[in-house]
Amino acid sequence: MGMVRTMKLEFQSKRFHFRPLVEGDIDIELALWTDPEVVRFIAGEVSTAEEIRELMPVVTKRAGRHREVRLACSHRNTNVRHCGC
Image 1 (spheres, rainbow, N blue to C red):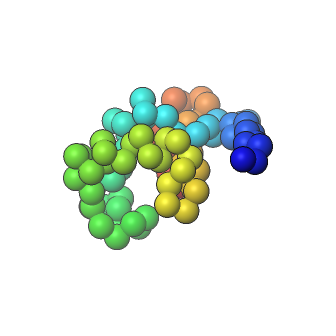
Image 2 (image 1 turned 180 degrees about the vertical axis):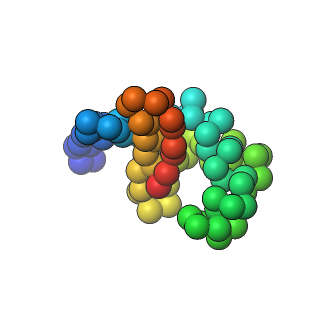
Image 3 (image 1 turned 90 degrees about the vertical axis):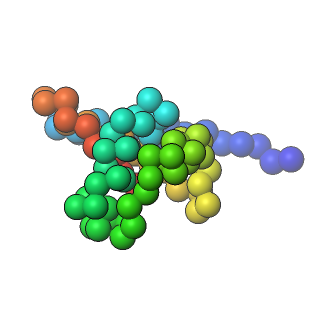
């Protein structure tokens, strides 16, 4: 079996802090993915709270269907948070 590489997927700018999504981000994920006004710009279809809770362990392991990494972003000065793809 091959070696598994790990890399730090966290970075900051003067205004923002980006880090991998964690299961503790469930509240913001629920707020985003169940809001039709948000979802129409990013996915096209609203998810149920149950679907989101079911998917959180998958997307936080960085092993989704396409091996994507979901990031959480927070504004450093205002503590405003956002989770995205």
